[in-house]
Length: 167
Image 1 (tube, rainbow, N blue to C red):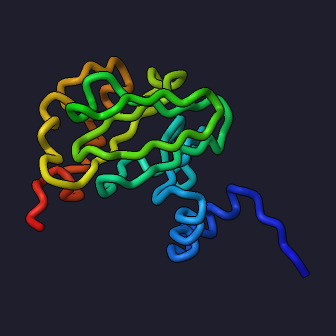
Image 2: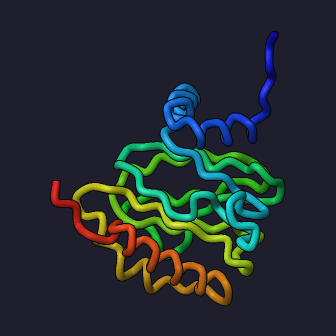
């Protein structure tokens, strides 16, 4: 008997079985996946979200921003990139792969849903990861996007992601 799974089922299985998601991710050429969703699978009160909303990666790792629900994109936020890092802008309803080469803090937005607060943080580990933190915190985001980003900064601090690495 053979079973055919769609992308959402594979991602759900990957969350339940971390080894499967890591194997699948590396087979696809990326090390992390961020879903672009209309509502968060664990908290339906969160709408127009990236999942996860905060991601920590090593310098050189690649992230697939996947448009699970149509109408979303992934784009870097002006003022929220480390010096020398490349901006990106994915197309609406299209997956985009981004390689994060420079340590630092990256802001991510969904352009059509920015006013609804669809933002995320990617923190790239390595020497100098906090060098652009003050500039990134000062980036102007209006309305709900600004409030959600403030929540993300607090969550990232609680997770210990806004401390220099001691390794």
